Amino acid sequence: MKPFYCILLLFLLPKPLFSQEEVVHSIYFEFDKFDLKEKQATDVVAFIQALDTTRVESIQIFGYCDDRGKDEYNFKLSNNRANTIKNKLIEKGIKNKIIVTIEGRGRILLEEDIDNVSEARAKNRRVDVVVNFEPLPPPPLDPGVYDALKEKMVVGDRVIMRNILFDRGSSKLTLSSRKELDKVARILHKYKNLEFEIQGHICCTPTFQKEAIDMDTKKRELSKNRAYAVYKYLVSKKIPARRLTYKGYGNTQPLGKGSEFDRRVEFLITKI
Image 1 (tube, rainbow, N blue to C red):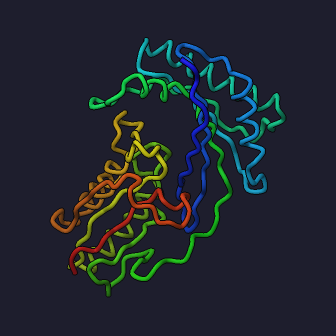
Image 2: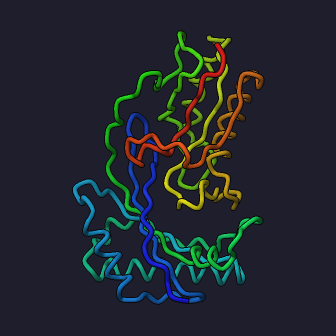
C-alpha cells in the first residue's frame, strides 16, 4: 500500500485569557515500516519552513501504529517512526532545542462501528508533527456571548469558558481547570435560578470524523467526555444535577474566527 500524504489539522490548546494555536502535519507509513520516503521528508520540512517562525514556540512529534500486533512491538515501532521524523527535521536544519517531545504512543484501537477497516488502519499508521505557537489574544465576543457567568443573563446566552483547560487528547480536568470551576460553582450558588447545557467542542478532525479520540478511553468521544467532566465536577460541588445537562458537539460548531479558537467548553443558558 502506498503511503498517504499530508493532512493539515489546526486546533486549539486553550490557556487563560489567550489561546495557543497548534498546527499538525501528519505523515503516513506503510504497514510495519518506519522508513521515510524522500518526498515525505521534503514535504515535512517545507511545511515547517512555510510557518510563521516568529510565533513558533515548540515542536512535538508523536508516533502511532494500527491496532494489530503486540503492545510492546507497537510502542517500539511508533517510537521508531517518531525518531525517523525527528532525525529528518534536524538533518534539514530544524533546531533540536525546539523539538520538546518525541514520543511513540503505540497502537490506536479501531472503533466498533468503523465502516472501512483498511482505510482506518492506514490512517492510524502515522506520525503527527505538532507545531505550537505563541498565543494570540482572543477575538471580540459576539452579542449574547460572554466569557463569564453573570447575574442578568437571558435564555440563549452563551458563555465561552476560556480558562477550562484539557491536555491534548484528554478529557481529564487539569488543576487550573478545577480552580476555574470552583469559581463557577460559587457563582452558581449565588444565582440559583441559572440552568444551562455544558457543551464540549473540538477542532479539525478530518471531515469524515466529527469527533476526536479520547486518549484515556481510546474511543471517539472526546468532546462529550470533556463536557461530562465539567458536569461531574460541578455536581461534586453541590450544584444540583437538575440545573445542568451536557453534550459533545465535536467539530460541528466552529466559531468562524480561526480554528485555534474552536476547541472549547461553552455554557448555553437554558433557563433563568
